[in-house]
Image (cartoon, rainbow, N blue to C red; front, top):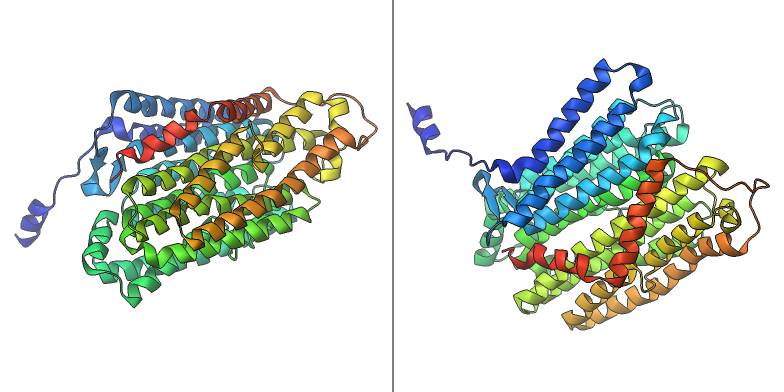
Length: 509
């Protein structure tokens, strides 16, 4: 009788099938891929890539219809507030799905040409993408943690997909060990948060802190949680796994890790700081300040010394992560200083804007890396010598991506940098201005190593005696075309991504 009475008091879960449709379509797609891989003969295993690409594009349809239909002032709330589909969630779901689709385009011929299991590859990719779309809507510590592990665990395997390559095996082991350590720290911090507040929902945690303030145990819990996320986003000093993992993993996997997986960690960090720890901003913004300053500085200074373009892009990714942390610092300072709610949401929108633009720039750069490596079989920057003489279109496209990553107008990267600088300067404190100066100096440093690649392509002699134009598969051309159009179009009309980012926080409470 007691069990029946208790069950009667538990509210029935509320389902909104339309709001859940993007996640459900991805689940259906990964099931179809798994079955297709079992029944298709080996010579037709390439079809799993087509199924994956079609399923990801299909998952975008309910995202578009939800935007068109409208979500209301508070979004679609499910599972007693643990799962919310609002503008913020939809913008990030769309980003993750498109990033996964572009990764499929990068992977089609790369994976098919090696001794790899294609069906398993796309299955793992879809599972990780599913974790990302769940992450975007998570408003509960348990849901956040499960989503983050759903993102991470498949990528441990993907990083080691070149199973006969010692570097790939080493990359996966390092990534796995650091991933387990970061998860342990993060989970320990979350358990302390639950012990202090008695809640796992981010809204309830926020209300508890607003009503009772913070104590030393809660401050430690917040610190441990942030450290756990810092490992996930490869922020300095928790970055040491990233360069070796990026170099050893298959290049499409590296692109996926540097963009989608990194963004998943950022989304988790944004959610827990904005929705859960906002009243305790004075406890966490100094930690994020240090992470941002160290990541920008060490990432850029180390990238200058790299001769391998994948390692250079790995340290570039660390530095770019530091730039993305700057608006989070601005949001924390604005909250602590009791600035208007609009200034806080503007700073958070700057993070989303930077994430969206960074995804296009980095995926495009890795597409060119894959295209060049098809001939040279090398990732050395010197192998790009004289690329303009043989394949001028590829040299122009790579120049666009490098210039955009450096923040040169009128490409998309300049707008990402502009929103970042505007957010931290608007914070209006000495610490904010100091971080802005550090970011400005690092933006100049980044210019040198990005344009070292450009100099190789345009002003250095051919790296090989083969003067034939490079040829590459159609999916790779499509990936480079999509990302190049985004980089140019957003640079000329920045309102495209700026409006999306503003909407994502306009109705978020």
